[in-house]
Length: 257
Image (tube, rainbow, N blue to C red):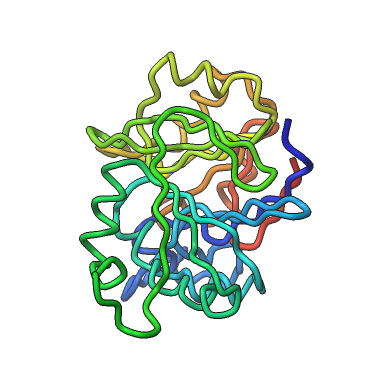
């Protein structure tokens, strides 16, 4: 049983972010702050524990913008750059908290972390580098502080990606298929976050209509969509078209579970 949780959307955009560099479209030019999307990440916190899911290329700014002074752990969904590239900046927490940062990832993602940040794992370490403590996870539940976590394996085309269930809240990004066995781990959630890239078919992400269909199949009463591209349209135009109980997430949105 988890304590009450607060979920903050640190970023809700796809790998290019929104606005996309050099794009003149109406979404990228929108003055609506809900159309300004950093790369996808969330903060999950109880009264005593703070966890970030993925360290995006925007990680430093996301932590400053949300004023996160303490961080206990990072969970990783998969090793793509838009979910991993900001890891070096956890060293600020090393400096002030005076302890390693616990990272939770599957074997594939851990291998990428070591390959992308070899200096953090060198036998002779340069002063000031990140102090990282790797914790391998797979499909078994685990606990960070007072937060209980159930990994959920989904598919990003042929890549296995981890979603996470925190009590009655489930977070899934970068998916286009969920096997029935893993769906059973999701059923009973009261709130789900699911990726919905755009309207047109994509090789490795759910479209908006596919994400809506998954939510209905899972029978979850509240849903928010994330990992959104500029191709999905402006928030003000798209959000009102969604079924009851479903909404587009946006940066800075806070939910309670």
